[in-house]
Length: 118
Image (cartoon, rainbow, N blue to C red; front, side, top):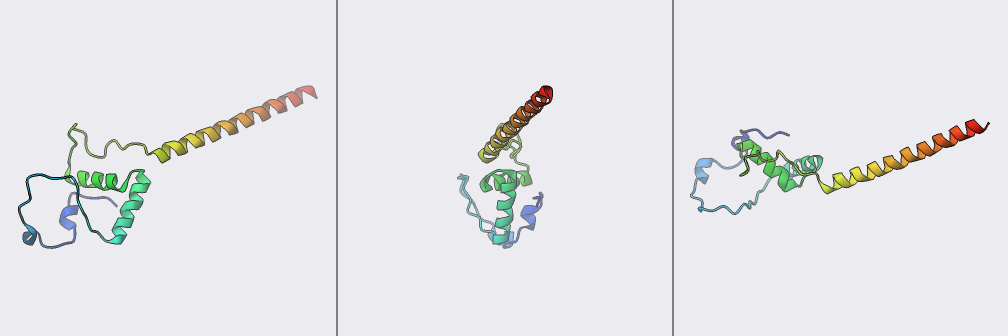
């Protein structure tokens, strides 16, 4: 699922003219959003695939849809942190790989010694 710049225009809901109102001057950065359960599920699965929180994923998609840039000038969502589960999983796999390579090396040396002695 890819958000487009027309995502806001395509979103279901009430007519914009009926919802036009004045907003207070400040924004808290918090937003309560209701959505269909199926969309919530798809967004959660996409955030899992990307290894980020659901909040970070939705924020990145929304920022991309409006072309928002962070205060440091980078586009929102460009630099996603490596989640701990991925780095831990990678560490475990690397350690397992080291054990397998070590076992293969010991077996190869044992075969060479056995062949040399016979």
